[in-house]
Structures are given as structure tokens and as C-alpha cells.
Picture (cartoon, rainbow, N blue to C red):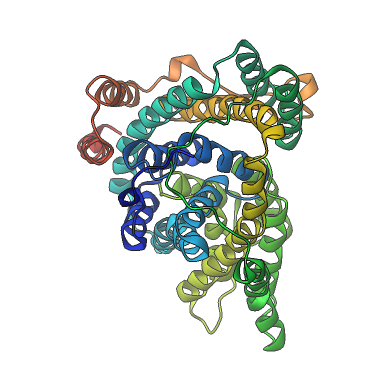
Length: 435
């Protein structure tokens, strides 16, 4: 196996700073977040090689929950074991959690956040450029045969127009890859060590399961007000069935939180989604907004804001802790599959399907960045689930201009990530009077 020099293996301190930076800058939903991790970890630092990255992404896309956070946890585990995975996973969500909790408090107290929305307006344009660049780069690596292009195209149509469940797409792609593609394991450029399954790795999933359920047990033992265990139990269930991305989950959560539990109003739910769109981290952080208002509107000890903060933290614990279980329990097994030659062709098929799925995410993100109006189109075979098409007359010239400038800066002048994001944030703030 080809290996880089040992100096390319980052220290835990160095990796921690990078994971923190990714967490702070992880805008743009899963497409933008995956693209940013790819750029910082694979392209710029070469800590993980392309095949290892895509192999990890294949697994994370199969899991319920936020795939980008799970990918960060997986990559952190690859580099530094369980400690590295915990640090990467926590830092990926921590900045967004702090931001959505602070914005929820500000929203509840009627403070103005227009300046923050303006900054994120500029950042989204930059993230769109990063998404497109990453998609093109990954496609150039994964789509080297005609059959791979066909698999990617069919995966895109399946997820965008036909609403086929993602696990079925993966199974079909693996089968097609085994029939029509040749696996190319090739030499790896990553210095990442092989992770063995020792006693600590075996016990870690059990520890995280117990830690995940500990708050619920404590609330039952100490007879907490009924809203608290109800919030935790509801979002714990959501975490286990959160397939299909954040928007597939939000419709169910909105219905239950608004009409069944009466934790917040429909208007508050929509405003929470808008706030989550402008913060870093997984889009499911909007669920923390729901948890905030569940306890804000049913406060403990006449302290609504502190109760809301507690609700947001309980929600985050219920939603994100299972991801650590999935990664620490499954990643060692998934790594053994990577080294089996008989599965190389199937994995190549899955990799091609991932390109199609990423293209769907990139298209969705582009539509919502560049257009102010998006129309939901439900086809007869889509079982009532609609896909989005833009209203072409609603093209936002400011968003289009910023996105075009960002793409030229990235693809023509090879501007690095931090200067790009800084310039985009400043541009967005400058455009505040026109937004």
C-alpha cells in the first residue's frame, strides 16, 4: 500500500482545530458540508485519500440522521480513533447548536438578526461554488466508465423525481456495479492507520447507547415535568427513523410539534426553519428550535429562556447521540469490507450512485440560493412527495452575481477556502440595504 510520509498524519491538536473550523463554516446543508470536508481534508491537507473518503461517505449515506456529521465522526475516528471521532462529531454540531440556541433566544425576545442573515446570504453564494467544485472533482474520479455515468444518472432521477428511498438506490447501485463495473482498489495515498476492533472499540457503542438514554432515565427517576421527557422521547424516536434527509423529517416533526403537542405555532415553525438555514451545522438543528420553544412555552420555575435553552440541549442530545453509536459500531466492520476485492465492483457502483445523489443535493441547494420562489411539483408516481422547481422569474440577481463571482474565484483563480468565505461574508453584509 502506498503511504505518505508520517508527517502528513496530523496531531490530534491540529486535527481538532480543523474540525472546529469545519464546524464554524459548515453552511449549505449536507452538500455544502460534505464539499467543505472534502476540500479541507482530502484536497488541501491530504489526510484522507479520495477512495477512503468516498467509502466512508457511502456508509454514512445509508444511516438515519445527519450524514455530514456522521461523516465527520467517521473521518475523525479514522485519524485518531474513538477520541478523534468524538471530537470531530461534537465540533461539527457545536457551533451550529450555540448559534441556533442563541438565535432562538433572540427570536423569543424579539431581537433583530437581519445583519446575521445578510452575512449568511453571502456565505451561501460561496458555499454553492464549493459544492459545484467538489461535485465535479468527485465525479471525475468516480465516473470513468459509461456504466458508471448511467448508474449516477439513474440515481439522480430516482432520488429527485421518483422519490425512491435511498437504501434501495444503494442496493440497486451495488448490484449494477457488480454486473457492469470493474472494481479498482488501486493504491491509496492516505497515511491513515488501520483501525482494529479492540475491547474499547467494542464497548464504545454500548457506552454511547447508555449515555444517550441517561437523560430520559434521570427525568423519570426525578419526576421531571411531563414536557421534558416528552420532548426527549419524541426526538429520540425521530433520530432512529430520520432517513431521506432533513426535509423528509421536518414535515413529520412540524405536524407533530404544532398540531399534536402544541409546542409552537405554524409561524414559529417556519421562522425556525429560516433561522436554521442561516446557521452552520446540520439542518436538523432546526429541531433544537422546536425543543427550545417546547419548554419556553411550558417553562420550568417561571424561567422561560433558561427552560428553552434546556429544551434545545435535550433535543440535540436525543438527535445526535445515535450517530456516534452508528459510527463506532459500524465503521470497523465497514473498513473490513473496503479491503475485500470481491466487493470492489459493488462499491464502485455505490460510489457512482453517490455522485447522482450529491448532484441532487447540489441542485436543491442551487435552486434555493439563486431563486426566491420555488414551486413544489408532485408527480403521480411520487406518492404525494413533491420535488422542487424554481420560478424562473424569481431569479435573485444579487445571489446569482455573488455565486458567479465565487465560482470564478474558486475555479479560475484557485482562491483558497478562508479568503473566499471571508470575502463572501463581507459582500453579503455590504448588500444588507438591498436585501
